[in-house]
View 1 (cartoon, rainbow, N blue to C red):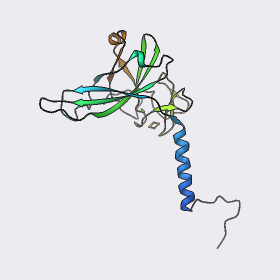
View 2 (spheres, rainbow, N blue to C red; view 1 turned 135 degrees about the vertical axis):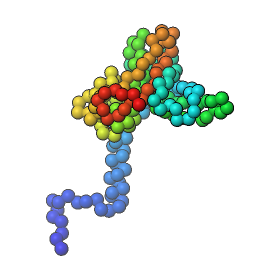
View 3 (cartoon, helix red, strand yellow; view 1 turned 90 degrees about the vertical axis):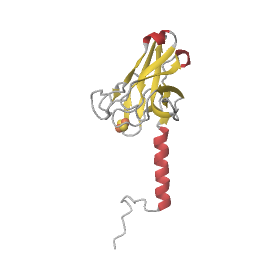
View 4 (cartoon, rainbow, N blue to C red; view 1 turned 180 degrees about the horizontal axis):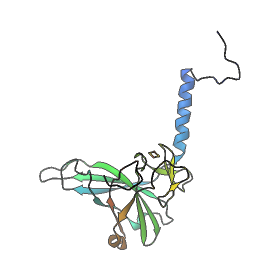
Length: 187
Ligand code: FES
C-alpha cells in the first residue's frame, strides 16, 4: 500500500480536526457580517391567516429622528398582526426592511430579502455596503449590485409615503418580489 508523499494534501479525516476546520469556517463567514440595530413595525391585517401573500402592507416603521443622520442603514422587522371579527392571532414576522435617511427630507427603504434566492441581506464588515452571505452578492447603499454579484437585480426598493415623511414618520408599503429574475415582479 502506497503511503502519501509528504507534498500531497492530507484530507482532514480526523473528526476532531474536521470539527475544528468547520468551526473555523463558520467563524470566518460570521466575521464578514456586522449586526445592525433592529426595530420593528406592526402591520394589522383585518383578514384571515395566510392572506399576507400578495398583499401590499402599509406599515409605520420608524420616526425620521431615530434614523442615523449619516445615512447608515437601520433594519426593521415587519410583523403582521391579524384580527378578524372574533379572534386576534399571534404576531408573525413576515420580512424586514432597511431604512436609510439620506438627508433631512428623504428616506430610502429596501426589502432585506436578497433578490437572488431570498436570503437575508446584512451589512458587510466594512460598514459601507450590503452583503448577502449565501452566495456573496454585494449591493451599494443605493441598492444597486456591486462587482460580480450573482443577484440578477439590485435590492428591491419600497415606497415611502412622502406626506407622512413630511410629518417625520416613516411609513413603508411592504411588498415581496419574486427572487431569481431580473424584473421586479410582486408575489
Ligand atoms: S441568496 Fe443572496 S446571493 Fe444568493
